[in-house]
Image 1: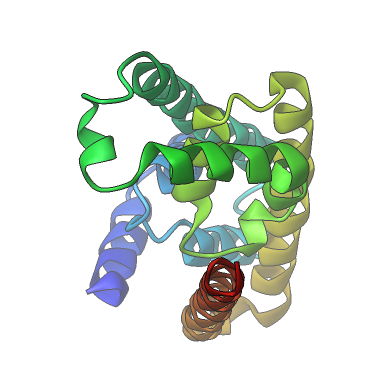
Image 2: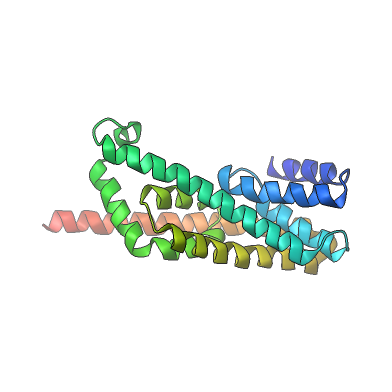
Length: 209
């Protein structure tokens, strides 16, 4: 399904002038942070191939997509901050608290206060969790200035990596999507193992007490 979406967008892009192509990639970079199914990473690699072919300016497409990525991240942060305020104001009524205990929510906020900026710094490299990270950062009301700076650095490094990959492999840019898919699965499995390990550790402490 994702491959079909990518191919459709690629075919669609071919009908646009350069200015329109810049706009499309900028919108994709933004939406990829708001709507996780959007295959922004592989399309960013495609833009690197277009830059290598002389159709786009590599520095310009990098700057535009980095700015769009940060805007998308901060948009989700804003939504998360609104949700966080609602949860704190309605501890016994908010719909999310039907699924999680407020005590766990508060512990999650404490953990984000300690390590959240490191998570944001690496968020672009944590495929499949970016929207969750931005929402959680907002719900925890992390420092906005630090959050913007760390999301900017993360986006700058990740986008530069993908653009460089597209530039290097050129016609074989589509292969990058296969590696990104495998990479995303590995990341999700690792996160799942870490979370499960923390759950067992916390449960063992409760039992010991």
